[in-house]
Length: 192
Image (cartoon, rainbow, N blue to C red; front, side):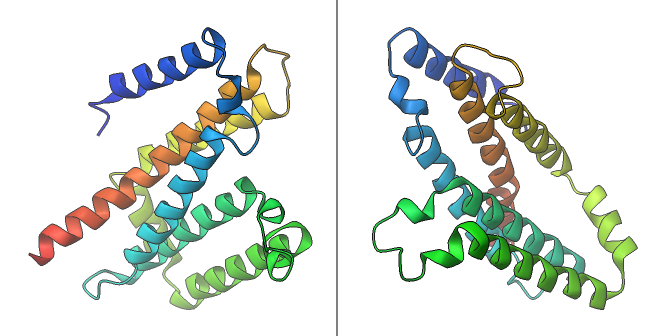
């Protein structure tokens, strides 16, 4: 899984050098390159995890887990993208920012939790999640998001903290999408 960690390191170092040494500070600005890459990864991850809920040969636990991951990615997407700044969003945009966003996310999570509750096998669902080969991706993604929060809240005043925040979040979302890509690839290979 992490046999290509050197590539991740080199790409991150290249971004750091480009921003700090070469002056490409706009790459880590609000709604710039790194945030657009994060939005792309989250849209793609949401769709892929949702696709993983479709195969009929999957267990109910796997389907619910993938629904939860898709909803998690969608929740991150709504938090990450400033929908109100997009053109023509004044008509339906209220659903995706501010109180509307909070209400929409709350409603979707309540629907998912109701499905989990109705399933009745919460222990089985948790045990399947804990036995997953990709739980370590989710753990590392969570830790990187916590690093991003630390830089975002400026607990320590560090030069180029915004860059480190955006890099941590981009890497977290990249790790979040890896299980979905593998799952879709594996399902396609099984169907052939």
